[in-house]
Amino acid sequence: MNCHDATFLLSQQRERNLTRLERLRVKIHGVVCPACARFGEHVDMLGEAARNYATIAEDDDHHCNGTAA
Image 1 (cartoon, rainbow, N blue to C red):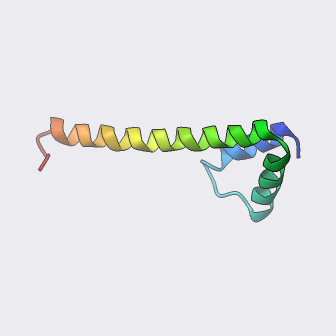
Image 2 (spheres, one colour):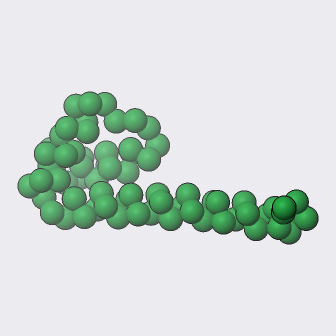
Image 3 (cartoon, rainbow, N blue to C red):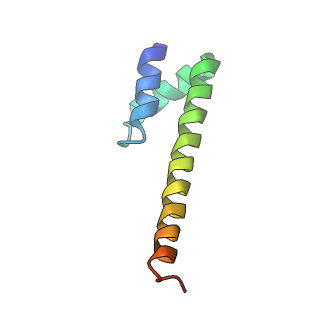
């Protein structure tokens, strides 16, 4: 697997479940390629930040609409 394929799959894992073989290939590539391993960490952090933002925005909507407890 090359870096292009690895980063594509790392990005795809947010949209769909990777196959067992894809996950294994990405994991092995990440062991030998620190840049792709770091990219995977960044993708995870961005996903978490997006989820947190959505939660905060939802909470703000409840407060603005007067539905807060």
